[in-house]
Length: 366
Figure 1 (cartoon, rainbow, N blue to C red):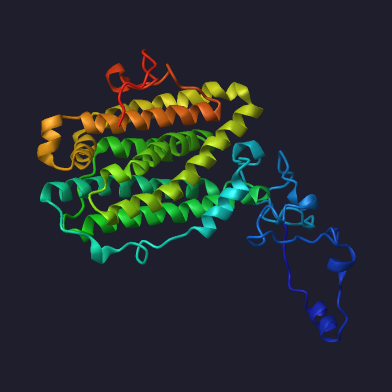
Figure 2 (cartoon, one colour):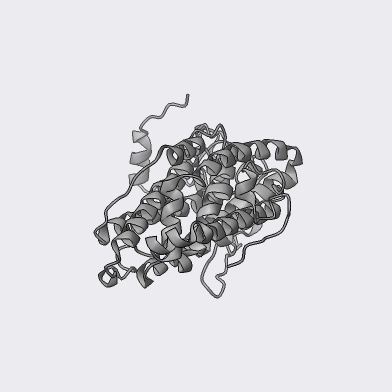
């Protein structure tokens, strides 16, 4: 272990103007390479120049030294465990980070809470239960990257920076849905074991690959589909804006997860077996959620517009939503290079109406 000591003699020399300047004389930086801003400002792509833009497939050191700088031989080993680029990288990372920092919004300032209308009690209870579920799930998407962030080598700093934006995004989502549950007088609803079981599955993931597949592709992908259906579900313009703002954030996270999986599989195709196994276990829990009253019934009431309407038409409205959710998930898996059609761990009665079922046709249309 490297020891450090105070060099009092250096202080005396420096006071006399006798600087060391070894850091300058032996600097190996690419002097003269100048990053030039684009139309929107100085982006990560603008500074990915010369050797500074070269991301190694395997990080040669485990330090926090900025990639491309000179590194003293005695800089300590931080002990990073994720040291291969393909474990965390995606080709869209740089652009997603820039989008994330430019589209931050406030759950306090940007939602017109004073304009929230008083809803029919059944609708308010449904919205509050729905908001409780989303507030619960969204905090997981902050906890997961936070768990792995410090394990990722600093040579992949762009991935770390993007995950930091995801943590902030998801904290804000948890905040906005908690606020919605309390702003209309209904209060928080009920937390249920099956949701917590899925969240635990993600947090207990044995590696980043497993957790990312379960969270970015499956969990956040399903939530993104719900946000997209917000125009159908939202009982007022206030909720419509909440869903819309959350959707733009969630789309980034899912885009990263989809392209990360694709990047991973293009370089290690044999890992497809592992990823199928990860999603098998996640889908088994999701199948239970699709048959859980606290999940199904609030969505049905919101989609139908009232409890009476939901009782009259049964689950037809929420069946349309579920069909879209599953179909969009299958399409994401296709884009990632991990086709799940015909392999999903969902009962046929749940898959009915999607191309994941045996008929292979979307029978239900909105």
